[in-house]
Image (cartoon, rainbow, N blue to C red; front, side, top):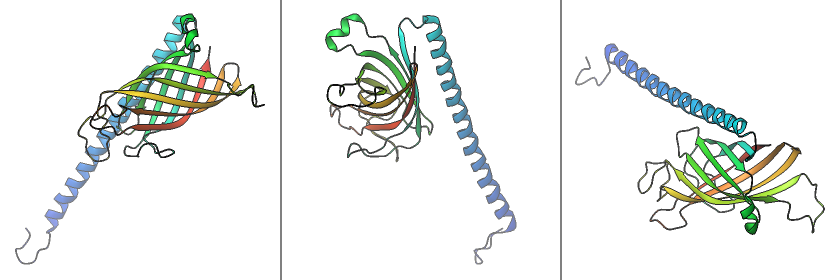
Length: 222
């Protein structure tokens, strides 16, 4: 026992305190490992489902599948403010542009999602993607270079009007999503690119702490 005057810990108290610390660390580590395994299983399942989807469709309506890793919630060119951490694993499927989209410039519909590896905000999204080489008539650049931009919406599992430290108050469950991408066509069916996307509610809610992601993607064209 600890004496009222000495203020020193007994050997038994030190042993109990050490046991408590070790038990807490083990519990936290186990929770993190289980969460990481769960997220990995979900990601693998998504990739398998996408592969099966493309195979079953015989590539008649799936045009391209993109896989990438994004830095989560960064500040770029004065846009946004960092708050959340981790990296995002990104998966996106682009479909052939329907004939009636020609009046819009023949954008490709897309569906995608980003899974955060640190337990922060995850989101799924959809919209339209315009891609091409608009500089051809002005600049002589390699034909393999391309640019793409998209507009659409997203739904997330993050916080809305209240949030713990280190998390964003996004204000609305549904957000606008825009992206810009610069890439290089390595082969007819393979390309690499750098993509930046921005998610926000455009100031339509009380809180609008947006998310910005930047990373590298690999595209497989069918």
